[in-house]
Image 1 (tube, rainbow, N blue to C red):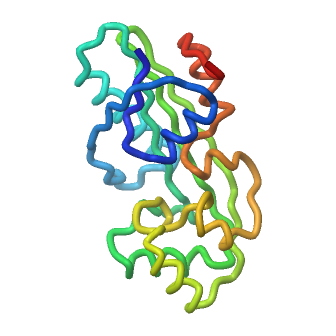
Image 2: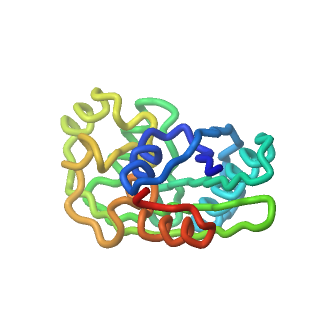
Length: 190
């Protein structure tokens, strides 16, 4: 059986979009970055820890588990989910008019093996004024998203352009995920 170690509705939608059948096995882990931890290492560690925690919780010797994590990186700073509207406002101000990267790591684990990949996409925001930032925060959309925005929702109008995988910015790089699934004999387009 194939399991998704996530409560993210976006990851569920993306896997469903490519025809993957799965059961949910969400887990909670400590997502605090380690001191001086590089962004790619951070998302890869969290994806692997989520998948490992879910695998350990399942009573299924044939289980294959997908864990994933997405973070927004501005310079050397990892922008996680905001903990308040003030935090969201500060992140959006920092992203205004700036290029940044979105890293997503995907980990597939079974009892026999594991594979972890990560993908980076560059996103460039247009310049935002305070009224736009306040209006966007008022929608509530920023509050459960890394970097305080969702490109697949109302936050799409904040983005000037991207270079790389759109689905990566949403939360799961589909091309790379499909390749991992193939390596574990998990069918897509089913």
